[in-house]
Length: 302
Ligand SMILES: NC(=[NH2+])NCCC[C@H](N)C(=O)O
Ligand SMILES: [Mn+2]
Ligand SMILES: [Mn+2]
Image (tube, rainbow, N blue to C red; front, side, top):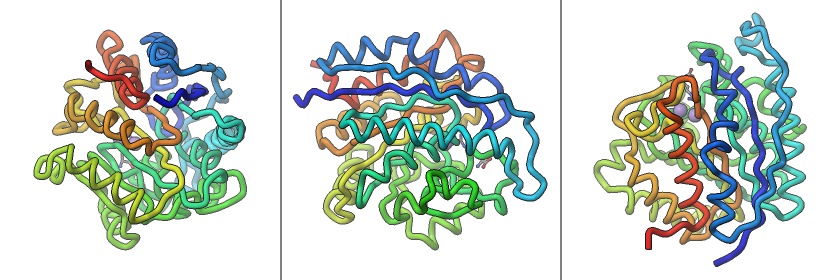
């Protein structure tokens, strides 16, 4: 097995939404033993510590309809710089959230190292709202749109370039709560989505085979980032998330997905987001995150 040098970057961010506590996600995932879990697989781990996050007032900017805009752009710039340095050194960036707004920074730091990056967005939501379509002004509902250059310039232009990824290089897995504006955008930009309907009908094995084939053979990506929102999984397994949606991906299906990604050797960076220990039961959601990180990095049942 290929030994990796994994760099862990914590992002204690909760300003992309309104439920406090998700800023403690990185601590909860570390407490659940993420470093040992990865080292036990024979990889090297370096914990790079946390990105500094300023306090925010929770206000929605009148002109942009973006809540906590300045604090989030500042933090995602800083995260982008750290992630870029990690990727440049040849290490595998593993980002721990924090709410999903941080993906804006992760992708800003990753994408400059690839010609044709692919993204797997494992999530109950499409996270493709913009200032215009967002019902809440919550930036954690916007990062995927921002990544392909759609949305307010403050979000699309982190690290001074846009887009970070081509819409046709994105695969969404697990969607079951998609807003009307997001639905239109999915059609318009030709984004590949395996919603819960397809997972139910085709099975996770087929969905992952097809996702891997699509990104590798059809799109010819030279790197793939996995952005995994713990609310993609059914809340019966991951109750510690701010926007739970019933009818999600099962625990075993999620492990299968991670195992198949490992076997394919497809993933070149990853982030695990939206773990909220305040809403959790005995750190179960962080435990699931760590178990899935294990499978993604090569853990086998026998
Ligand atoms: N990363 C997430 N959990 N996003 C939830 C987004 C919910 C909703 N679509 C919104 O835009 O406000
Ligand atoms: Mn989500
Ligand atoms: Mn999300």
